[in-house]
Image 1 (cartoon, helix red, strand yellow):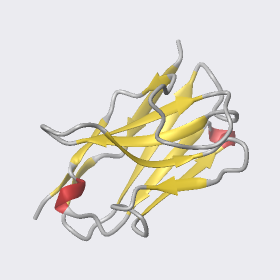
Image 2 (image 1 turned 30 degrees about the vertical axis):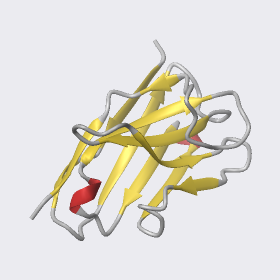
Image 3 (image 1 turned 135 degrees about the vertical axis):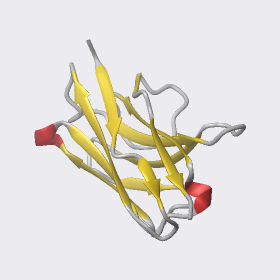
Image 4 (image 1 turned 90 degrees about the vertical axis):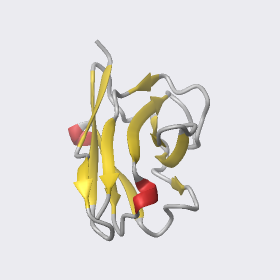
Length: 124
């Protein structure tokens, strides 16, 4: 079964950090673009960051640029999202998604696979 599993979410104080992991099974991430998305209650799902398969180029939403870093470890078939300087408005369920084989990276409407999500809560 093709599967993406997010982990690493939890409760953190404003200014704190979390590292989210997205582990793939049933396929290899080498040739897939990977995106991180989030959805807060009552709001639409939005793209946070993505990383391409071809050259590992990255893209970030303006709201997280300079605070979040996406990376991939193909040997471990895992993608990470390092989240620093967290703010209450970052509170959401975070999802990883894979699209491919493909070139480039973006917040596509037609990602092939989605994880179940992990809750991130930023509160004092």
